[in-house]
Image (cartoon, rainbow, N blue to C red):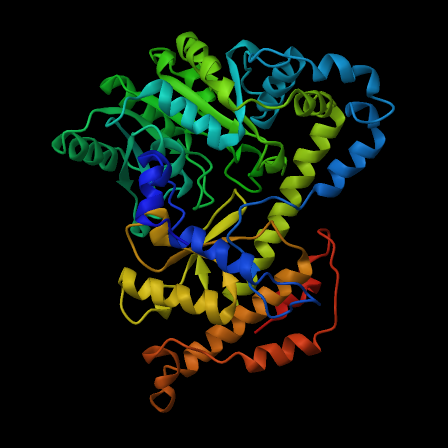
Length: 485
């Protein structure tokens, strides 16, 4: 419910403007889920959440570690000796053990090809806080960052809402598999200049949300050369670094800096978090790693508004310092992500739905262009409303990611159990079959004209479905998802 004009006048313009982006289809999908969440027994016809990039596939490994290391928590009898020191005031540099453990973990995630200096780490309350802090440090209100599109909708909030900074899309197209080119970067730079904007930097997300792809070494080199020539910053958001589950391997911007002798490292900054790689978004562990000491100093002062609790720092330091656990977790996470990604994309392909080839992330970029009557964003939104309201799946439309082409949707796959995946695939299968039926002259009225479907047959099928629980290790050939036609 919106604020009345009288109440709005009592509040600040910052608090009441639309910069948060909460009214976008991206967040509307979440609201649809929140108001009618799927539950296999209590609400089997509710909305399935496939719009949340959350990693729940390896919680058992973390829970197992916690049970074996009760001393890691200051709230247990085994860890209570550390309670007083941890609970008392700590400065905003962060616990030394925490910064050392995070720096080591960042190196391990990148294959130990580079090392990170703990003194260059600034902690923040999640990736959101880290993004806003680096935006405050590098740009003034009205300045701009170039960002390859499609890009994460939250960037508009994180980088722009309270800072007054603007984002200028660098267009990527499906014709070359959404590859980032220097030609597109140059075009976006000139467009920003023509609009009177001062470009302060380039923002990249690698691996990409929503594409689920990684930038190759040559592309990263060309970006570094670009920012050096323009003397502008580069912010590399690498919060999905450990979610790479197939070739090609992840290449961090930190590796490029080791290779490019002439690069001005003071222009390069990395954003990181444990929300995606470790599946701990509730812990609010965000990281800024800057090669620029002045930026580190400024960011540390600004981080006072959103620190990571020392209790969390203490626990994370203990967990990430366990080398055997870290090795096992990274390897097992990749296996489980690969299996889940293959299961869903292969299942979709069997009833004619394609997606961009991807190798990372907690999502994939689904192609529904052939289900639209016309290639317009209006038709995309009509299709999305059917998927939300009738199919009862919260997938996110490409327009909310600033995609330049209608018909693409982001689908998150790591935030649910295998049984829910089965239900989701059944619903999509029924939707596609009924859409194909609507192509015939006799049934043209069913969804082509009014975009509404009846899912009574699906619900009957779901109600008769025998409950099944599959483990992440279940072999793909025996999965009913693969056999679905």
